[in-house]
Amino acid sequence: MPRNALLASIVLVLSVTAAVVSFVEGNWFGVVWVLMAGVASNLAWFYVRKERLERARAEQS
Image 1 (tube, rainbow, N blue to C red):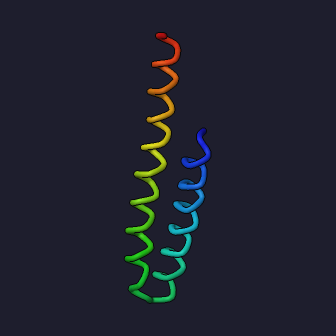
Image 2 (image 1 turned 135 degrees about the vertical axis):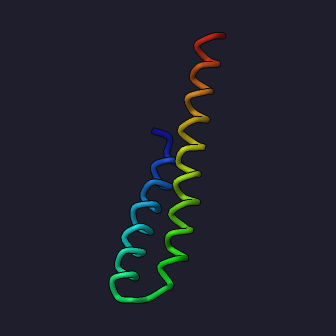
């Protein structure tokens, strides 16, 4: 797993945890954490897919 994807996954886990804690406490600020989790998830998938494509190109060459 690429380092950027790993860091994005860590941010994803932390933001989901923050969202759950925020909603349990009755704070609507958790919506911002959910949005951040979505962005982090997209970044993680982007970097994983990018590395897979680069590996496939390297194997073909």
